[in-house]
Image: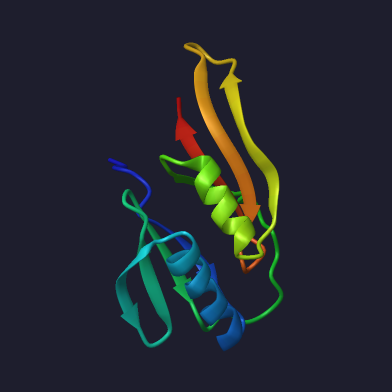
Length: 125
């Protein structure tokens, strides 16, 4: 019955955070706006959506979600763009093989987004 992940939702506590998040996801990562409403925006990743709300309140906690991964055809180029925009890339681009059956070859990097979220930049090899 599940057909896939529809969207990931982020909440901003201030108008400044919202503007920074919109700039990061649209200008740095190159996502396009799918829809906009008074309290938020929905961005198209190509195979799912990122929803960002401007009306979050309270203290942010990590919770159970560790990160989300964005599929790209250029991990290195996107990681460089993230760094150039002043954001932290805390795991540099690297090839990995997960010891699964069958083995899963990938290239990945990790960065922090404007709200402290951890984002994996990912491609299959």
